[in-house]
Image (cartoon, rainbow, N blue to C red; front, side, top):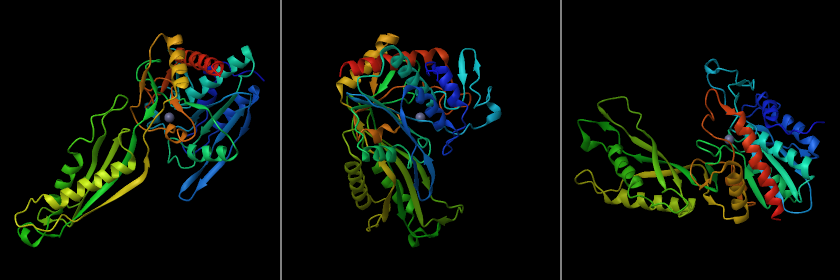
Length: 397
Ligand SMILES: [Zn+2]
């Protein structure tokens, strides 16, 4: 069995598996095949839940005496979109002008390919690390994320697994390798406010109660004032109204109800709970206080429902992990990476409950797009960065 030292070969094997969520597509088998020559023990639990597709996952461990490093990621990919618009077939791993094309090239089969190559090179040169390495790979990151990382962590922890640090290989760099390490993520909550009115004729408004007026008052209270100014590590908390719906096609009717949907991305001056309390308070005050219509005495009749599970905010404070990774990036690229908590959520939000976690991977420019692709030079550079990190992290003990 040959050692999986070439990140481009590793990546080609992964891209050729059409693993669009929830399909395994052969991608986890390909990871298992890559890891076997390194001596990993590989397990592939499938998780289920009513109303969601069954998902296969992979947990691989190389045991040693010392600290335990986890590499986390996903082999599932988003759909290819308009396949005819691709200049190279999306599951071909074709190379053109020094770039490898394929869905998942940067998000994030490329990260997995580089980490495995880095480990293979390390083991060939130094033997096994002075500690344990595990790969926690899900097939459910781009989908509902119900039968993936969250259950895989719980399953592994239930068998006694403990980790000292984790690195997630998502594409974190906006423009070039070395730009950015993610050390945290904002939280996210979504809700819908519904205002009840009374339907009627527009010519006889005193007989009706237009819910749109009340909704405007409540939307204003949701968006003003600003929630905070941001912190050293985080952008300001931001609420966006994502939809306003009345569903009234008639020009001469006052509708019976109106709704506004919103999402909030929040920093660590809030928790999901304190922010929900703030929203309830703003709506309670605004609904009883402001009157758009003369003589209106009764408060605006509304209710609010919270959608989905909240994503919790987190910030990693592990100097060994952050400094070692920053140092590795700097040593290989010459760049000083920004330590950022910007952008969307990722599976790091689940991992942070088990151990300190940071994210670093390829350049994200083409992720989820037609012609997703990665320069072969970037694969080599990321492999060097991961290799240096593995060496330095275990050496620091
Ligand atoms: Zn991803």
